[in-house]
Picture 1 (cartoon, rainbow, N blue to C red):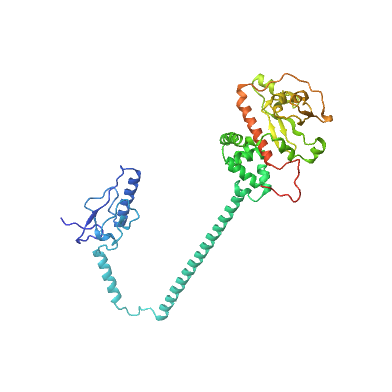
Picture 2 (spheres, rainbow, N blue to C red):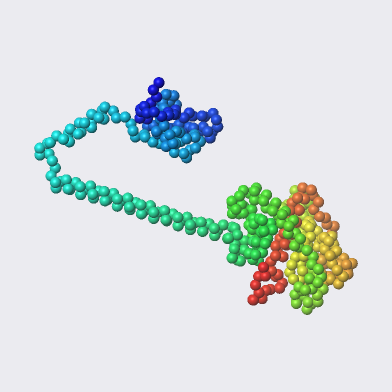
Length: 428
């Protein structure tokens, strides 16, 4: 049987190849590749009678339509022989085409008197063609210049937008070399302290929330995260900050206190002042448990609070923070039970505010309590309790961690007692 090529219907000696099949049951990738290859072969042959789903096995393509003489591997899509690429213009000439060319040649040879256009008209036509061609080239050139100008404009706009986005994005670049931004967004003293803290905890989000006072709704809009994700990340990171930075709130040795004692304290109390104590309260939601509600109600604030005792060195660093107590607890009750008295040494002086009637307790440690005269008030003691409600325990622990982390950040900032001189610079 004589085999012919379906492209040019030639009978040359050589190899012949069938159209590739569509293997649609061997996975999506193989199915897509084989389908595209079959379509590429049909398009290369350029025959209207060949359909994708009905190709006879007798339709063949000869080897002279491939660069290497044979089709390439079906998965090698970049190979030029993946589909036929050569000899597609060598189509057989039909009898009607031959007859049309023959008649056209006869018309050109037949002389027709008086029908030849004059030379002037022929020259005018040539000039018109030249002008038309020149106008087309000029138009193409103008379009090319306009396109190039538009591309350059878009590239410049893209560069400016990237620079603007980089300036407004809350990252290291946004805060670098700008101390005011560092202080506003984090509350820390300088960029070096921020990066030292960042390298320790590897998280910037909770620092911004806690120190700038951003509320949760504003924060999840600012950072483009959901409310649940932001709360979860904040709580988890507070645990990390508490574990890694909690040791920065510590009781200093006596020689360290004496070495950093401000002159104002030395003139009045000598070098014996060990700590300044006071209590502060944080407002909470109203507990659902009746017992917890009674323990947290503060008559001083007129609402439900958690109360902490804080100890500050004369230099201004926080050296002690108690665990949280119910707002009903008195200052004396907290002081006697929070563990601060056990840290005093004989001869230490404790400066306290009103409500701290702890002279007897401090005297047992051979320490002395000094209360300014204008703050002396009659304090009534009452039976107080700490929060013991199991349902509020986790919330109570979280508040304790946040308060201690805040104390750590305060210790990272310059002292508010000793003001730096005009020539002093950041030591970090």
